[in-house]
Amino acid sequence: MTSSYRPDALIASDISAYLALHQNKSLLRFITCGSVDDGKSTLIGRLLYDSKMIFEDQLSALEADSRRVGTQGGEIDFALLVDGLAAEREQGITIDVAYRFFATEKRKFIVADTPGHEQYTRNMVTGASTADLAVILIDARKGVLTQTRRHSYLAHLIGIRHIVLAVNKMDLIGYDQAAFDAIVADYRAFADEIGIAEFTAIPLSGLKGDNIAASSDAMPWYSGPTLIEHLETVEVDTDADRTKPFRLPVQWVNRPNLDFRGFAGMISSGTVRPGDAVRILPSGRTTTVSRIVAFGGDREQAVAGESVTITLADEVDCSRGDVIAAADAPPQAADQFRATIVWMDPGELLPGRAYWLKLGTQTVSAVVREPEHTIDVNTLTKAPAKTLALNDIGVAEVATDRALVFEPYADSHDLGGFILIDKASNATVAAGMLDHALRRAQNVHWQAIEITREAHAAQKGQQPKLLWFTGLSGSGKSTIANLVEKRLHAMGKHSFLLDGDNIRHGLNRDLGFTDADRVENIRRVGEVARLMTDAGLIVLTAFISPFRAERELVRAMLPEGEFFEIFVDTPIELAEARDPKGLYRKARAGEIANFTGISSPYERPEKPEIRVDTTRETPEEAAERIVETIMGTWSPVI
Image (cartoon, rainbow, N blue to C red; front, side, top):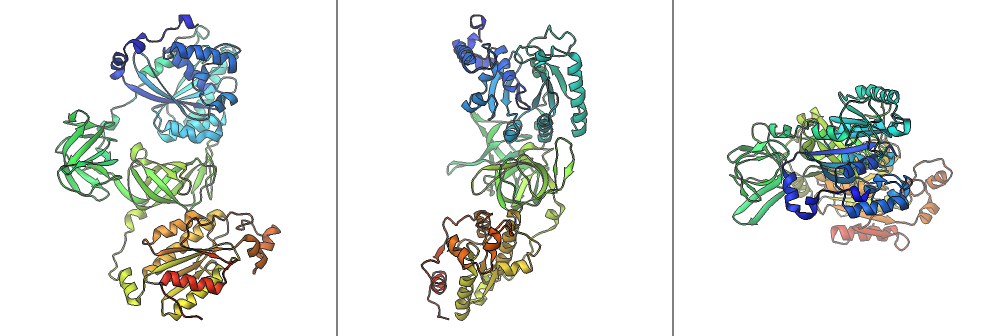
């Protein structure tokens, strides 16, 4: 086979000429997806082979690998061209997203081979996020499976409107037309339910090459296009974004010298020319475009998909994360939204926890509220939910700490699609699509108050502070916090102690002790404490507050220097020996669920402002030291 296979000779002889040949061809990005072992990697390998995109040395290596680790009995195993990870070859499945480029005489292609296993659905979402077309593979022996439905639903949800139903491995069922027709009918019923109006069904064999690049003699009953013919001719409206209003998310402020200040980024939609009136969002300031600077010099215009630097006629405030838009058709800005979320992390969503939300070049802190419902992609039913687990798809409200410039995902993938990032691990935990801003986000505004927090503090003659005592149950938090407040009171300071048990009798009486409820408990306490520091008070809180993310959320609510994390560090053996409320005994007996230190984790502070070692320091000594550190002076002994 090697002797008869010849890749494009121009690649080796004149790479510049080869690139020039393909420069003006249109580009189609597509993904292959479906269930495990439906033949996605084999199909892509065949596409690369049939389009002459494999060098002779690669083919020789492929033949050797096929004999050594292949699954085709010595024949070429095309999947090995794509399954590059050692773990993929060992297991015979795709784990990561593999991107491959190939070209035909009519078009260029970038294909993403996405995993079929449910565990790696999050990787499929990544590959689909930039695709124009999805090839949904089905094993002709198995028909439509749950993962087929899941990937189809996700592809449609993400906005892919061109679907190819590739019924693969037709050679293994004797190229049976009746079986093909039954699979197509089954898929059509599902497609109608989720809103896929059209799809193209092609019977093929990735291994044998049937209906890939050439029509199959084994299936004379099929008269439609081959897969490559369809990929070459499918109409992808690459000009659609250019007809929309102008949008440029600012990625970088280009300031090489004192005489130049430009704003760089990729135009997500529309067309811009020097002299155009633009609006900077979220500030709303208006100005005009002065220059369009790109590689090679100034431009008379730039369109969607191009990366440029533009300069503005006025010295307006504009930085990374802002959006420069057409002045007469700007996008919206809001801080509360309804969104569809695909959860991609093994750990569950914790409603109320703050995550980083990244949308285009904007990064804000965001809280996801308890989901309205999740969607079962197999039955399309909606079920109530309190959280989202791995691969769940749900609808929830999202609140951000400042206004986010956005458009509904249906109108703009660039300004409507986002990811959520865990603040502690920096892992991407979810992908989401903004549906619309909540009406209350447009109707609720900050009320200007003439008596400021500085005025309240000056009246009391003190600097507001939040002393956040954290530690295990029985560590002595409340005891030490109470002693600290007595000393502050004796010094004439205005303070207030918020105790965990007391708060749960009133404000948070509706919350339990699940991880999600603990997060909401601390969020509410943080909001109350912030309001009290606005009044000029020194606030003390005594809560287990087991998660670092929530303690950091509260820290971020206050001005720098006002939050003091005080870690009451008591070994669990000592805390359990004290057990003043008998809680550890009940937890050990299984009578209390989600008990911190026993059946629920406690995340120790990494860099607390103050650490109290209760094995070496009495509560009175600790209180004295805390007051001295906080106030910078010795307090009277009580």
